[in-house]
Image (cartoon, rainbow, N blue to C red; front, side):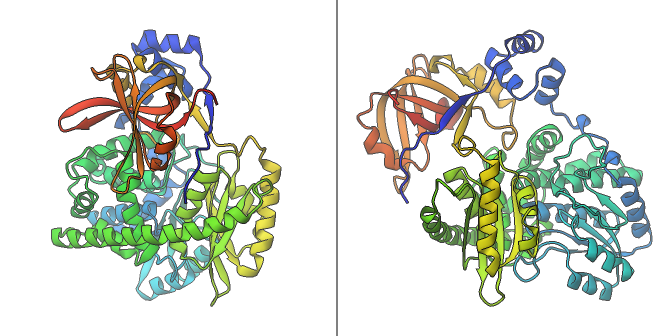
Length: 578
């Protein structure tokens, strides 16, 4: 489906000249770096220094998490008595990495541990009574949930009656009533005193693992070396804000992932084509994460878990190749569902539909990605529902924009839903097919009240407007110190006006990408800069006669054949007369 050139609104972020000047003087940073820091709310030298130097000694005390001590005490008893423990996770990248972390850690401490991650369609999301019954038959006396469990009040009570204690470690929004577990470890609890509320499920698992390690009298350095790689993968794949403690976990986790000794992760890095490359958040977000997630979307979740758990090199290679195949199958199926969903979207009255709700006989593992793609395209909240004619049920995946709290909206539709869960930016639900029309109407009403026309106008937040000649290697090195980039810490966008266009060409195997050569005095020793725009190759013909452009872009280093140059990765363009 061809996209027209529909420029976005460029919104220049505010400046604070006094705060910027103070950072320049006290930290010795570039003026533009100072502006980027202040725009992130880092207005004091102390806050900026903490951001620029995210060292492990700045991690918070894990015992500040609610019920952390109770969880450690119960786990110590279970380990000492060789009780049978079941780690119950989730089927996405966050749930998989946190399940692997808990299982590896407890086994290394001598625990008798089984692990269960659900099959997306067969088992459904979160802890269910059939799994508890099976655990009882197998002699389990303690269940540790990870990345799930916070909404399972009845299931925890069922486990208690069956003689099974439950420790919940989760990061999703709690309901009005907390499950009566031995411990409910969740920084999102209303009574939580933990300094950072936005840990991923694997972040909670990592912090609790560190708490348990200390509680048992062991040092934490070995624990951190062993599990920071998993913490980074789960945090990035769950699109958590890369600020504060998450920034520390991901920055150091990427370094440990680069040198990981886990055979499965090494094999996965290899099939992604990253074996000889520096790993960053993009490596996880576009390579490692999608392949781990493809297992539950297409086949058995256990394939991905086995890869994270295996110690056998040959098995690791086999599992990584299988995940690579599943990821390609996922991409093919995703493209088909996206096209079908788009046909429904374009039939909706876009002047009225502030929340896009589409449904079809689609696989549940694909719909979340499709919802995200539709949100990216139209900048409106979206719910994609995959229906099953045999059961009369639909599984929905919702994604949102900043101005619309998806969890609150879905929570307001409780009467129409079988079950639901999630957070402000994303939610999942089960719904009877006969309720979909009413659900769509109610979601549109809620979005119509909450969102203005300006809220649904795609906007790019621009850090700085400057001349290309002001871009330098020194500046880019300082910008690189702000990595890892991701949700909550976006790579900064720059804008330059009336930049002369020297050459327009298409690139890629299918000529799907666009590359502009732009005039940039003093840059790269040849007064020009290569400026790629991925998946916009169809604009080449239109731009061939355009003499200059206003450009919105990310300046980056490009290392190719041993030579480093500066490139501008385009995000949007406007002919100057627009």
